[in-house]
Amino acid sequence: MSRITTMLVAVAFVVMASAASAAINFSYVSDNVGAGLTRYTFTANSTVPGHLVGGFDMTFTADSMNQLNPSGLPTIFQDNNASIISAGLDVNRDSQFLFLSSEVTAPGGVAFENGTQLRAAFVFPAGSPLPAQSINFAQIVVPTGTGNSIQWNGGVSIAGAGLFYNVSGQVPEPATLALLSIGMAGLLRRDSRLGAGDH
Image 1 (cartoon, rainbow, N blue to C red):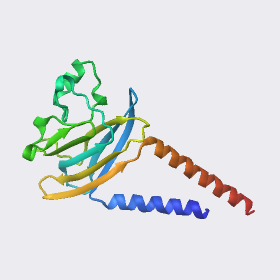
Image 2 (cartoon, one colour):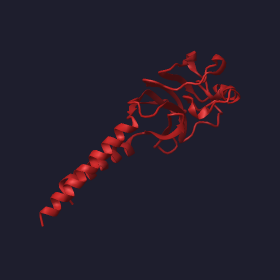
Image 3 (cartoon, rainbow, N blue to C red):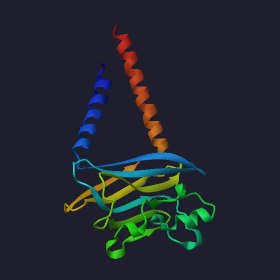
Image 4 (cartoon, rainbow, N blue to C red):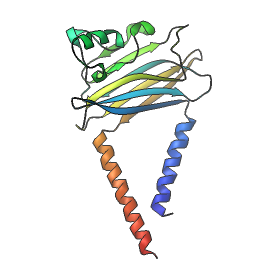
């Protein structure tokens, strides 16, 4: 195994090991929802058996965030998705938290959205079926291929445990990931050519 390949495997192992040791695994998947938009669906997963995700205090920020507000109604939560549908729009193209506001308790009423931000602080009330080991909790929709990135900052609480874990990070723009992949492929190809020349 070449030196560059060995270093890449070692780096990948360290990243996986540190992610596995965290109490909260914060991840996302992306998909193209048409109209030049990409949707990122965020998931919080408790890695500690018996610890259930019980709430969030989260701010998502992007240079441009798609928000659908038919009739001026806010769509921070899923409450007004019927108005989005009746206006002939696609709810998959709206940045929102993936709950009804009646399913959560928002201390201090912290919840807002605009063209660059989505924010809410909420917990799942006692007796709610929502605290779970893993929860898809937000979708953020941004223009595809514009150099746009999504930053998040806040935390995840564990139901009934009095624990709150800070999380923050950034989603690279897909074109950046493509360039990184091309660069990595070039390094691996160069490395395999150097290895072949050693024989």
